[in-house]
Length: 107
Image 1 (tube, helix red, strand yellow):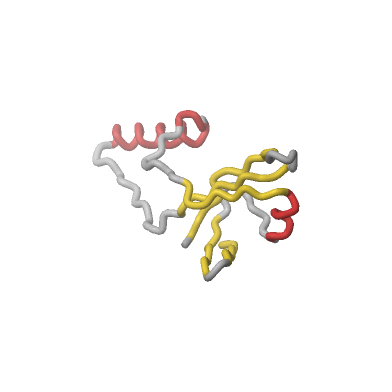
Image 2 (cartoon, one colour; image 1 turned 45 degrees about the vertical axis):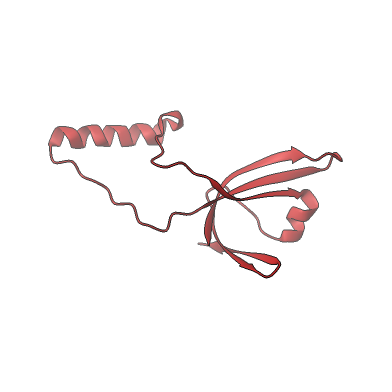
């Protein structure tokens, strides 16, 4: 399955160990097609809305609800042992096999 890193947060477990919470969402495999309006006025409005979405994150409108596919709670040691440097918005192919999980970074 293909996932994207949605969020990375720090946390402290019950024993006081510092760790990371990594939220992975399923990456949409279907291409999104841009709909170009018929009239010039509608195109201008669409371009203005697109510009606002890029410049003002709060104005951003999501077309679908994103549900986490995998949430990892790892101590700093576990994170280092995993050997994957997660970055927000980075995409990975995840292979589940037997009792293991493998991450392959997509460039």
